[in-house]
Image (tube, rainbow, N blue to C red; front, side, top):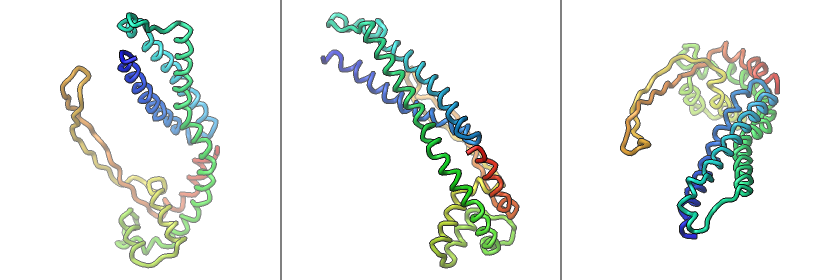
Length: 229
């Protein structure tokens, strides 16, 4: 069996990496989150079918005669019957791992929607109540640094701390973009045919702020965003 160690190890490693990739790709179903659980399920099903097809094709490629030809002299071969069942098994694994994120989104989506609908009015009232205190420079605009400064400037109740945490976690959803910065750097990676290749990577970072109008309209935006949940 030693002569099979390399192909089996490589095949297992490739399968594990492919399943992780399928799981990551499955998260694309979040693009349909605003349209409700049915849309998430449709996206998940489409991704799942695509992954199953790719999995079956990859399994067929791995089991082709050209790959196993060097091992025929050892009496190693894969019958057509076994090939079909292996392809089906790989396709099912690819489909399952791709569908898992969508299944999890639907399961947790309703809970999240109910939570945000409940918290949005409370966060609005809390932030408006403390707005003048947080807006230390009286610019009419809150940034994260102001909230952090304000919450450490005095003693607050446990419930107030929860509201601060919620405001920070939902800061981008509550507020609006007030600025951006673009960073460009170069990343080295191993080229497919050997050697190192340098590629340029550009990343845009957005800065958010919250004003009174953002806070007043936040609950309505949450209801509208999750109206299908």
